[in-house]
Image (cartoon, rainbow, N blue to C red; front, side, top):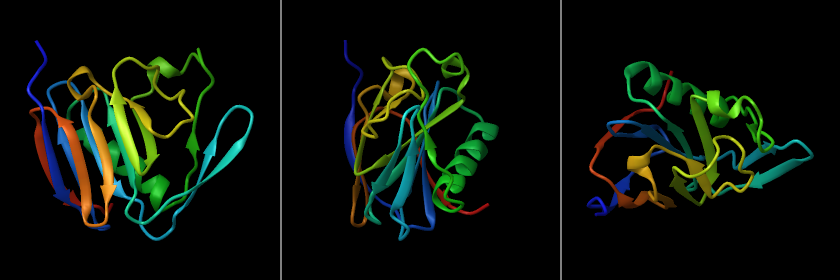
Length: 161
């Protein structure tokens, strides 16, 4: 039996971070903001991502606790504010199973529990816990549209460190 899901539109400002706290995983979401050029580093090339201010950076962790939420905020801050590149590991890289947090940036991200963390250069799919499998996160002018949202805590916090 498929778990009950919903769709929700949530307002989100550039100064805010949205946290989806489940029982086995956590997802954090921020707006891209005005600096829409990001670099995606793969084994063989550097890809320039041109994103709109209302697009989203989504981070996912396969655990739930206060330390993970701080880590999610730090990773998102490093990418959006410090301009750290997004890194894609090659398939079968030994570090993949040890990644505590993975990140995607774009207009739309779909979470999947059936992919290897950190190895997908297409920024429309992101590894997530079973409960967030098929969650679809889309940036809108005023916030984020969440489809297939499972039962979880939805929390909005200031995005600062």
